[in-house]
Image 1 (cartoon, rainbow, N blue to C red):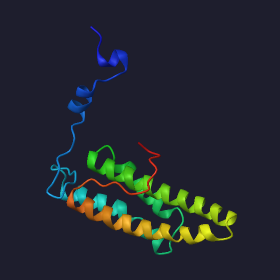
Image 2: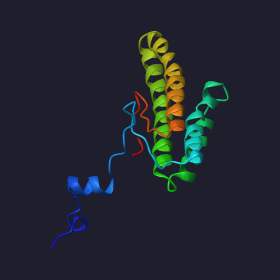
Image 3: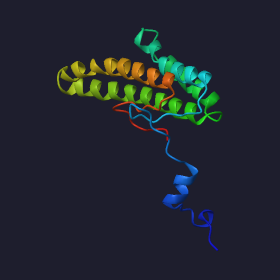
Image 4: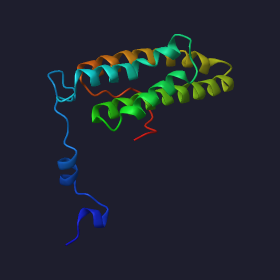
Length: 150
């Protein structure tokens, strides 16, 4: 008899049994019914580390902070793992978008820099929505995020 480990391929049913979809709340959002208050608060603070960049402290400090927070707790809770991974990917994506629009700004005599001014707005709005979702125990996906870490 060949097991799924022998072939390296899992059937859809095996994937669903091992990773069932989270329940959906009244607003139509996936949530974790087993998440604790401490986990919700920790996840919220992982998202709020982006405030360090938006307030001018800047640089890689917020990225390093969220990365350390995620690495510490990712094995303790699937909820924290998901929110930490999402926050890290979002911060990397914001940096990449700034680089792209900065380069486009050079090529377009500054027009790309006008678009780049929207990146901090995207960061602020996304961070607030993610922090609120985390505090409610909901899962969240940032818009315009490249998934570097899976």
